[in-house]
Length: 419
Image 1 (tube, rainbow, N blue to C red):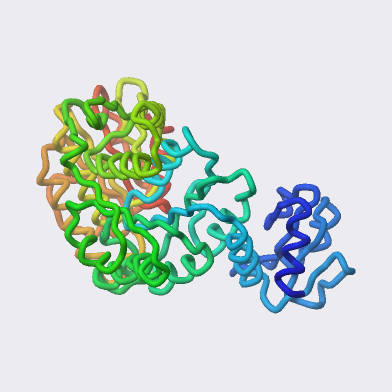
Image 2 (image 1 turned 120 degrees about the horizontal axis):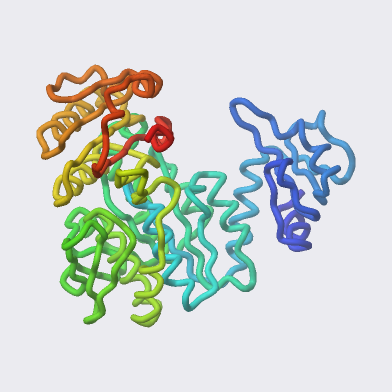
């Protein structure tokens, strides 16, 4: 079936589903496949649950004219999303980077949605499946699209840009994330800069923090919308980030100086799209982080900074340095392993362990196979979460400020149940 014909079926209800447990009446079911599942097997169930059509790529699962056989379901989903994007005469902002993507995306969406009908990536559905699904959620009411793009290897951002065709782009930073896939820091820079490559070829525009020399170099040849820290001043009087923009003080619910840049980007993008200063202020002040990202949680006698959504050497260093600057005492640090670092894993975990133990922290707890093999003094090490849970060492933590940070796979938010 030609993509134009499939698109006509999509326009009947503008609904796409990939999970038979969440089928909506009248949707198109795309039978995606993964390492441990085959969506083709659920085509019949999807139709029974209310889907109008099931798109499959294995002919043995063909049922009737309600099943549409294609060469590859995933590439068809991506092609449909790109075709739909071409029908949308709206600006689409793409953002990527090593750290802060999702928080920045949420802030940008909060600011722009005060003035426009926006459609943004939900959570961190930012890969080769999430980006098409985000695009297909956009409709005739959408005035601005905001698409987060994640990557752990070269050419991935290039693919996502080809699907989403963004007019605008923003890269939060280049950091030591996914080194296993990118191979090196040079690979990280090259991979993330594929967004710039797309904007350069398509005459798009890039939002650039003037204080980031690496971004200025990588974005050469692109029309740049500059913002800097001179017009947006940062105050570190308390743990929550406070900024001043156009003589207006904005008190965020975000902790950590690193979130200053995320807020600055949201302000700059809002200003470019003519969002009023008052609307920007209200949006940022009312944004409350969730999903284990820089959340402040009061648990019994302790104040907990929960930042357990993800971790890499760059974000871990920033979190520790910020936490070290807090005037609250005693300060306790609980760190979990950082994943996808490849051959750099041993060195990077050792660096972070040394940084933590050489800082002004009352106690440091290291959890995970990689951290447990580091050689540092003055730290309590545990090979896994279970051994940490079964120990009695940490149970003495009371009346303290506690930083919990680790990669998503460590699921360190489980520690909250131990206090």
